[in-house]
Image (cartoon, rainbow, N blue to C red; front, side, top):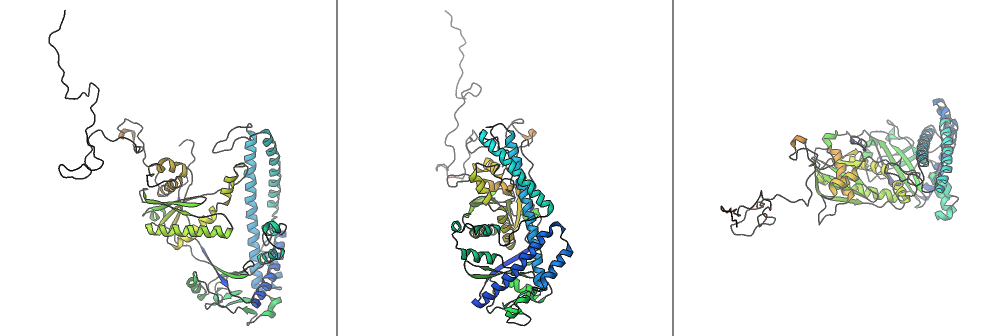
Length: 541
């Protein structure tokens, strides 16, 4: 089709390969002091190790890693040294990926600015590409901004090639908040508590074959948590072998049986202890890997139809489709609120997805079709500079988190997630499905119609309701009949047959024509009741 890009083939999203559960720790004041002291000491060691790793850059190798680990072993323990060096390596790799994304964003902005500068001032844009700038003043300002973006890109590329990264343990945003305490509505003591809690290090990877799956932070099946103390703090131990044990038992209300089965078999479980200074609470997170659930083939997952889902800024629009691509029942909308804190947004997404999955299981389907959205190329402000509301919308829309949540939660309900190409789903859905499915009692929105387009694309059907038959099969001699008749089209000219049987002389059922069609006024179709008379004699005078 000219003017339209090729649509990618739908695919089954792989299921999750890991599990993480969190619960609260009940600790006393003395225990809290010990945990803070241990976390602070290990956090300082992690900060120093991260500085060494950043200085090494691309020259780092296995020998450098061994040197760092030996240096940390004497000040903590061999297991804590291994956990710190591994976490440092992961953090450095994450910073490298972030720098690569930053460079891609700068290059996208540079390309857009150069394109708009090359166009005449005031030229209108299209849906695919922005137009020229509105005035000479704006054109001049953007030409100066292009120089700034190019300089930033060059510096970032130079850092990337040299292996230099910029990392702040505790977070760059929290570090900058120290200079804006009044705007953040924080006191210096409150900020200091958050900063120290963010820079603590109390995380240990598990090891299969060791007792209960972890020798550094160990939790027994009956819930007793103990921590292997580093060498400088060995005098704080209240248990043999330099361990500190908490008095209160740990209980995992979610996935507790799966966790017990895992540690009973001495399989690896990673633990992380973290402090919430605002609530003055401690939490423990247990995580482990598991074999990915077997992925169903696409055809097998769609044997009972699917649920088409259109993701929007404030709700999920969903519709149940049968295997033939026909919408079944009524559309459903699952609302959420993406304003507020990150934890609030995450909770809203979880609640909306929970309602969606419960409804999908009630429909008897085995697959949920979603759009494979990616706004990374659209978030540059150079493309949508004046459309601040639209830029704010796509920037806060959690496409990655929503999809990850959906995949992990759907796996627990035995459902398969199918990703489809999002191209033209809203436009074609509104064109072919919004008006036919709108009734006096049902208002079909554009998003509802888009959910049908998503589901039909996953099922392998075209978005339009009916395709054109071959020319030789068209009664109009290769005419224009390519879709169904419009709802307001007139029916046949003959008498409609009764919808139901009725007794003789009874009232006609609804929808039955009560009179014959009017006679044609043309000579060819003249009524048979007319009689044509010809005078045999011509009157002359």
